[in-house]
Length: 106
Image 1 (cartoon, helix red, strand yellow):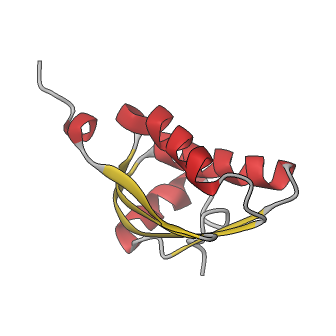
Image 2 (cartoon, helix red, strand yellow; image 1 turned 135 degrees about the vertical axis):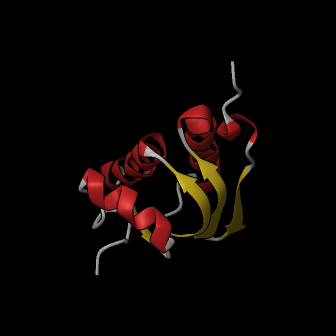
């Protein structure tokens, strides 16, 4: 059986003080880890800006993580905004009908 290339793909969140950048793969194989990493990094900051420009792969599970972070922030009265989604990832967001939520509309 062939190995899922996303299973070994790196993902990282860099930044601090409300300004972060995602890089690597956010998808089915690592969605739980990505979700928890974001929760730890973003904490209870009142405003978080997330640059998605470093994502090389984003599938529906990765989109679900972005939407979960957004919902959690809004539910706690915080602001979370995404920007810089690479063009190749915009199609995934568009097909899912969430481009406006992840800063891919325009």
